[in-house]
Amino acid sequence: MDEKALGNDFLLAYYEQCWVESHYTADGIHNLKCLIKAYKEFGLGHFNPHDGAPIALKALIWSRYMHWGSGYETPDTFKQWWRKYYLKEE
Image (cartoon, rainbow, N blue to C red; front, side, top):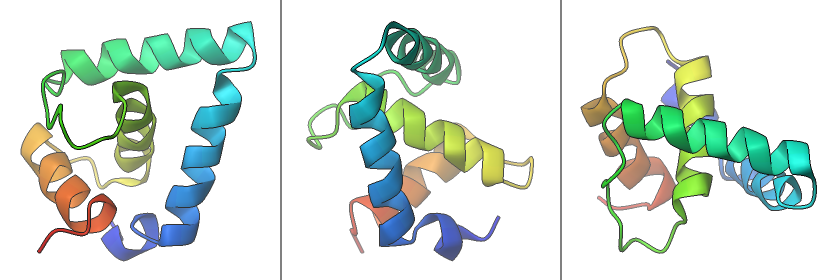
């Protein structure tokens, strides 16, 4: 995966915008619920609950992480990516 491409602030802001817009339609809400279900099934349901990001946003960004990934993603690789590229932790 090209982590720097997905970690690009502009792209992450775009996904945040998609997340916000998803709240305005029934289909959008349904899609977010499906993403949350898949996110939890992947083992991330209790990941970083106090980082300020709603689970639906994390699930959306996780889905893009999985989409752009190399096929070897695990819960741990997403957690590392999230902390480094989204939260900007060192």
